[in-house]
Amino acid sequence: MKSAILLFVILAAAGPAAPTVHPAPEPAGNAGFVPIFDGKTLNGWEGDKTHWRVEDGCIVGEITATSTIQVNTFLIWRGGTPRDFELKAEYRISAQGNSGINYRSAEIPGREFGVAGYQFDLDGEKRNANGLRYTGQNYEEGGRTFLALRSQITRVVPGFPNVPPQIIGSLGGDKELQSIIKNGDWNEIHIIARGNVLTHMLNDRVMSIVIDEDPAGRRLDGIIGVQVHQGPPMKIEFRNFLLKDLSPVPPPPGPTNPIAPIIISKPADQTKAP
Image 1 (tube, rainbow, N blue to C red):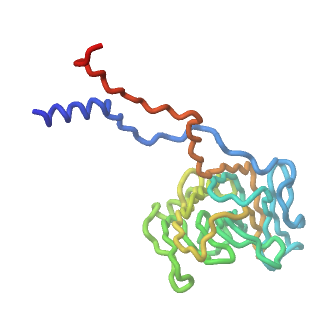
Image 2: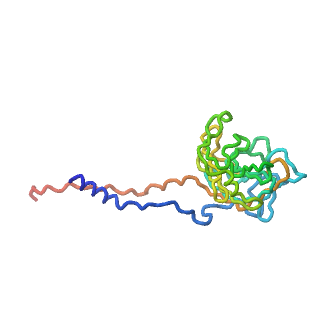
């Protein structure tokens, strides 16, 4: 009987059970995001202006028949080296285009506007004659190369190049995910980098996830940049660059006036005379 009474007291003290809560769609809008491109100038960005300009509210990267390049070149955002963050942007690319958004990256010493690091890969529908598309994959420019192809969840372990990334899951069929790409039209990129987990989304679909467990090869912060690739003439346009800081929130400060301890005095001895 005492055990039953004790259980009742414990349950009563705990209060009513918490209701079951299911995941809900994120509210519309971009709360917490800040623009990193003003839509008018390249203020805050740096690159070779032979290949980069602002036009109709967009960052435009272009290689023409008279301005070909031998190595990839980048337009670099000079506003910081984000660690944990979300990045959103819209892009439109020409049929022969080859580009990408680099993040947690570093400049290559001795090579002006050369960048190495994680890349949300982008390409046009006619870049490869066989119809192969790389859009959405995680490619490490100037480093360990293919970290996750589109549709893959991978774990990157130490040992590159002898040990390749390990495929540990699937995000669906590659061809079905390829159908999400809007050829010749605007697409929305969403990158989430938190700790060693890197998620690439395109038009609200997850394209690839990398869990980077290689301490020697991974980067936990770095620059953001956009690419034009060596090769045939191409054009890439970006707009609506938005960045959201995901740095851990510090714990609230402790109370400035701690509560004084409660002292229970011993009752007076009633047997003694007053």
